[in-house]
Length: 178
Image (cartoon, rainbow, N blue to C red; front, side, top):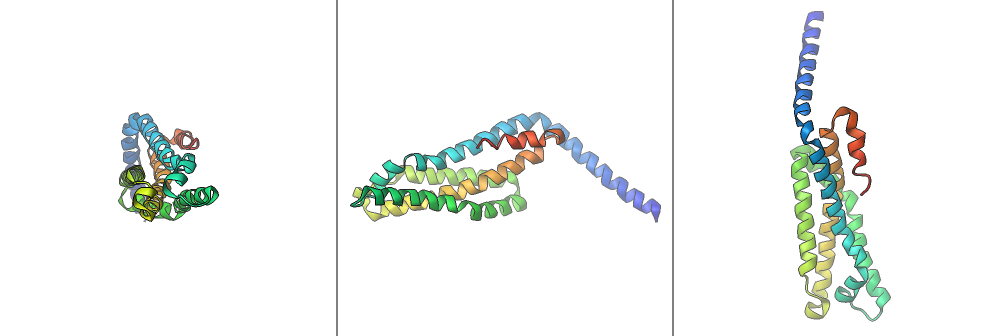
Protein backbone atom coordinates (compact mmCIF):
# COMPACT_ATOMS: atom_id res chain seq x y z
CA UNK A 1 0.00 0.00 0.00
CA UNK A 2 2.87 2.38 0.68
CA UNK A 3 4.22 2.26 -2.92
CA UNK A 4 0.76 3.15 -4.24
CA UNK A 5 0.57 6.14 -1.94
CA UNK A 6 4.02 7.31 -2.99
CA UNK A 7 3.13 7.05 -6.66
CA UNK A 8 -0.05 9.06 -6.15
CA UNK A 9 1.92 11.63 -4.19
CA UNK A 10 4.58 11.74 -6.88
CA UNK A 11 1.89 12.17 -9.51
CA UNK A 12 0.44 15.05 -7.55
CA UNK A 13 3.84 16.68 -7.12
CA UNK A 14 4.61 16.13 -10.79
CA UNK A 15 1.36 17.83 -11.75
CA UNK A 16 2.19 20.67 -9.37
CA UNK A 17 5.63 21.06 -10.89
CA UNK A 18 4.07 21.12 -14.33
CA UNK A 19 1.60 23.81 -13.23
CA UNK A 20 4.38 25.94 -11.75
CA UNK A 21 6.41 25.63 -14.96
CA UNK A 22 3.39 26.97 -16.85
CA UNK A 23 3.06 29.83 -14.37
CA UNK A 24 6.81 30.49 -14.56
CA UNK A 25 6.43 30.89 -18.32
CA UNK A 26 3.70 33.49 -17.81
CA UNK A 27 5.63 35.54 -15.25
CA UNK A 28 7.06 37.63 -18.07
CA UNK A 29 3.51 38.83 -18.70
CA UNK A 30 2.80 39.55 -15.03
CA UNK A 31 3.87 43.24 -14.99
CA UNK A 32 1.63 43.81 -18.00
CA UNK A 33 -1.22 42.07 -16.19
CA UNK A 34 -0.66 44.24 -13.13
CA UNK A 35 -0.72 47.40 -15.22
CA UNK A 36 -3.79 46.27 -17.19
CA UNK A 37 -5.78 45.20 -14.12
CA UNK A 38 -4.86 48.31 -12.15
CA UNK A 39 -5.67 50.64 -15.04
CA UNK A 40 -8.92 48.78 -15.71
CA UNK A 41 -10.03 49.16 -12.11
CA UNK A 42 -8.94 52.79 -12.03
CA UNK A 43 -10.97 53.59 -15.14
CA UNK A 44 -13.97 51.65 -13.84
CA UNK A 45 -13.97 53.58 -10.58
CA UNK A 46 -13.32 56.85 -12.38
CA UNK A 47 -16.40 56.31 -14.56
CA UNK A 48 -18.43 55.41 -11.50
CA UNK A 49 -17.10 58.34 -9.46
CA UNK A 50 -17.85 60.89 -12.18
CA UNK A 51 -21.47 60.67 -11.14
CA UNK A 52 -20.53 61.73 -7.63
CA UNK A 53 -18.32 64.57 -8.82
CA UNK A 54 -21.01 66.00 -11.07
CA UNK A 55 -23.93 65.45 -8.70
CA UNK A 56 -24.90 69.12 -8.77
CA UNK A 57 -24.93 69.30 -12.57
CA UNK A 58 -26.81 65.99 -12.81
CA UNK A 59 -29.36 67.24 -10.27
CA UNK A 60 -30.06 70.34 -12.32
CA UNK A 61 -30.29 68.54 -15.67
CA UNK A 62 -32.09 65.33 -14.76
CA UNK A 63 -33.88 65.98 -11.45
CA UNK A 64 -35.29 69.50 -11.64
CA UNK A 65 -37.57 70.19 -8.73
CA UNK A 66 -38.88 73.18 -6.85
CA UNK A 67 -36.04 72.85 -4.39
CA UNK A 68 -32.35 72.55 -5.28
CA UNK A 69 -31.78 70.50 -2.12
CA UNK A 70 -34.36 67.88 -3.18
CA UNK A 71 -32.84 67.72 -6.67
CA UNK A 72 -29.36 67.23 -5.22
CA UNK A 73 -30.61 64.56 -2.82
CA UNK A 74 -32.24 62.69 -5.71
CA UNK A 75 -28.99 62.85 -7.68
CA UNK A 76 -26.93 61.60 -4.74
CA UNK A 77 -29.52 58.90 -4.04
CA UNK A 78 -29.10 57.68 -7.63
CA UNK A 79 -25.37 57.44 -7.02
CA UNK A 80 -26.06 55.69 -3.70
CA UNK A 81 -28.33 53.08 -5.28
CA UNK A 82 -25.58 52.14 -7.70
CA UNK A 83 -23.08 52.05 -4.85
CA UNK A 84 -25.39 49.88 -2.72
CA UNK A 85 -25.69 47.36 -5.56
CA UNK A 86 -21.96 46.62 -5.46
CA UNK A 87 -21.91 43.83 -2.84
CA UNK A 88 -24.84 42.00 -4.37
CA UNK A 89 -23.46 42.16 -7.85
CA UNK A 90 -19.92 41.37 -6.72
CA UNK A 91 -21.36 38.02 -5.70
CA UNK A 92 -22.83 37.58 -9.19
CA UNK A 93 -19.57 38.46 -10.95
CA UNK A 94 -17.58 36.35 -8.49
CA UNK A 95 -19.71 33.35 -9.37
CA UNK A 96 -19.26 34.04 -13.09
CA UNK A 97 -15.50 34.41 -12.59
CA UNK A 98 -15.27 31.15 -10.69
CA UNK A 99 -17.33 29.19 -13.19
CA UNK A 100 -16.32 30.72 -16.52
CA UNK A 101 -13.01 32.43 -15.81
CA UNK A 102 -11.65 35.75 -14.64
CA UNK A 103 -11.09 37.11 -18.15
CA UNK A 104 -14.73 36.66 -19.09
CA UNK A 105 -15.90 38.31 -15.87
CA UNK A 106 -13.50 41.21 -16.37
CA UNK A 107 -14.62 41.65 -19.97
CA UNK A 108 -18.23 41.74 -18.83
CA UNK A 109 -17.50 44.35 -16.17
CA UNK A 110 -15.71 46.61 -18.65
CA UNK A 111 -18.50 46.24 -21.21
CA UNK A 112 -21.25 46.94 -18.68
CA UNK A 113 -19.42 50.05 -17.45
CA UNK A 114 -19.18 51.27 -21.04
CA UNK A 115 -22.92 50.71 -21.50
CA UNK A 116 -23.78 52.53 -18.25
CA UNK A 117 -21.50 55.46 -19.01
CA UNK A 118 -22.69 55.72 -22.61
CA UNK A 119 -26.29 55.60 -21.48
CA UNK A 120 -25.62 58.40 -19.00
CA UNK A 121 -23.86 60.47 -21.68
CA UNK A 122 -26.61 60.22 -24.32
CA UNK A 123 -29.60 60.67 -22.02
CA UNK A 124 -31.62 63.76 -22.91
CA UNK A 125 -32.31 66.22 -20.12
CA UNK A 126 -35.50 66.43 -18.08
CA UNK A 127 -36.93 69.46 -19.91
CA UNK A 128 -36.68 67.45 -23.17
CA UNK A 129 -38.27 64.13 -22.18
CA UNK A 130 -39.53 64.62 -18.65
CA UNK A 131 -39.39 61.93 -16.00
CA UNK A 132 -37.97 59.43 -18.51
CA UNK A 133 -34.60 61.21 -18.21
CA UNK A 134 -34.56 60.61 -14.45
CA UNK A 135 -35.43 56.93 -14.90
CA UNK A 136 -32.69 56.46 -17.50
CA UNK A 137 -30.11 58.12 -15.24
CA UNK A 138 -31.11 55.86 -12.33
CA UNK A 139 -30.87 52.82 -14.61
CA UNK A 140 -27.44 53.94 -15.88
CA UNK A 141 -26.27 54.34 -12.27
CA UNK A 142 -27.44 50.81 -11.50
CA UNK A 143 -25.52 49.48 -14.49
CA UNK A 144 -22.39 51.33 -13.38
CA UNK A 145 -22.79 49.99 -9.85
CA UNK A 146 -23.23 46.51 -11.30
CA UNK A 147 -19.95 46.84 -13.15
CA UNK A 148 -17.97 48.41 -10.32
CA UNK A 149 -19.10 45.65 -7.97
CA UNK A 150 -17.64 42.92 -10.14
CA UNK A 151 -14.43 44.61 -11.18
CA UNK A 152 -12.46 44.79 -7.95
CA UNK A 153 -12.78 41.18 -6.82
CA UNK A 154 -12.22 39.68 -10.25
CA UNK A 155 -9.22 41.87 -11.02
CA UNK A 156 -7.63 41.23 -7.64
CA UNK A 157 -8.12 37.47 -7.94
CA UNK A 158 -6.74 37.55 -11.47
CA UNK A 159 -3.62 39.38 -10.32
CA UNK A 160 -2.98 37.10 -7.37
CA UNK A 161 -3.47 33.96 -9.47
CA UNK A 162 -0.83 34.99 -11.99
CA UNK A 163 1.65 36.57 -9.60
CA UNK A 164 4.84 34.85 -8.59
CA UNK A 165 4.68 33.23 -5.20
CA UNK A 166 7.00 35.81 -3.61
CA UNK A 167 5.13 38.77 -5.11
CA UNK A 168 1.45 37.95 -4.53
CA UNK A 169 1.04 40.57 -1.80
CA UNK A 170 2.93 43.18 -3.79
CA UNK A 171 0.65 42.73 -6.79
CA UNK A 172 -2.45 42.67 -4.59
CA UNK A 173 -1.33 45.95 -3.03
CA UNK A 174 -1.37 47.56 -6.48
CA UNK A 175 -5.16 47.39 -6.25
CA UNK A 176 -5.20 49.02 -2.80
CA UNK A 177 -4.81 52.54 -4.16
CA UNK A 178 -8.20 52.37 -5.85
